[in-house]
Length: 427
Ligand code: GDP
Ligand code: IMO
Ligand code: MG
Image (cartoon, rainbow, N blue to C red):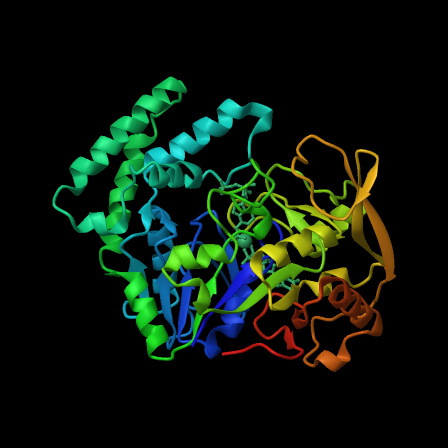
């Protein structure tokens, strides 16, 4: 048995939460492997819309084991809120939500440091979600961090205070206001108490045991490949490896245990926060995509920047992830456009190129488009792939020809049911 991986191929928000929820009945285990509450994964079913930040998107299926892996960073305040929301829905998690002891904790001072760092950057800010992600991963790699397992140790408070003091010195250097800290700490320790009721595990052992038992595992990515710390548009990226390799380090599985790699992408592009976005639209078409696609962040509520499909960027993401199947979401949002534009290459420093250059920050990267005929049909009520309009089938065929990977799932609305399966998909 192998671990299948589902991950975003763009700048996040591709619809990972929805599709993981749809695929969960095929799997025994759903495991998050990186990121933290910067993620906002939306699920819709039975008229309920639910946003998860830390908890894997299989949680609404009582038979699935949901694991928060060692590569994830956890804010107890946010995790507590997520758990309370599940309590309100009568969704049980005591037996099927497991947290890695090696997952790192986001402290209140990590969030202050995130805010201080962004404020100091001024117009060059990353556009972080301000959830403390960068500072927490810095403490992890700097070998200073606190982990979930430390919560059970007798000197936890001492270690917390030592790290907090270190952060306060840095915050003084930034001359940053810390008056909210007392309140944040109170809430944080309340969160710690709540999450103590969860099962802490050595997740690498548990996951490998499931593999030995021949039970199917789906690893759920957060963010997107173009936000990867190594391969994204650095420095406008997040602080973890969002690509497939991150599933190995974030869960403790060997590379040869990876099976299907589902790469998920929107039928167009969006991005929240700063950084290069070659096909970004600043006109009414961009506004129309935002309005029709409800493109506002699930975590911060910020309007998402919108633009056309970018083939060179998508090809790059497919390459670094070894994608075996593509999943296209939000095809319904493109209904009604007379033509659909697709960027096939860029004009860059007087040359035509079909790859993403090293340093696109602040440089001129002009997309070259082809136009494909659009379609008018409302797709949101469709239940059979055969009912897709010919011009959408033409768009799909074009993308498959360019990308050399089959598009096996087409999503036509936010609800679980609005999902059309074309072929393949495994476990
Ligand atoms: P994630 O971070 O990748 O899980 O994606 P988000 O939840 O942040 O953003 C995706 C948004 O699109 C959510 O509001 C989903 O409910 C919605 N969504 C997902 N798939 C579709 C689709 O096929 N069509 C439409 N119209 N909305 C979708
Ligand atoms: P999901 O899992 C979209 C973006 C932020 C910012 C940059 C760095 O829902 O797809 P960070 O908070 O990590 O320091 O922010 O990354 N970002 C996301 N954009 N979806 C996400 O997650 C994101 N997580 C972080 O907007 O530009
Ligand atoms: Mg999201």
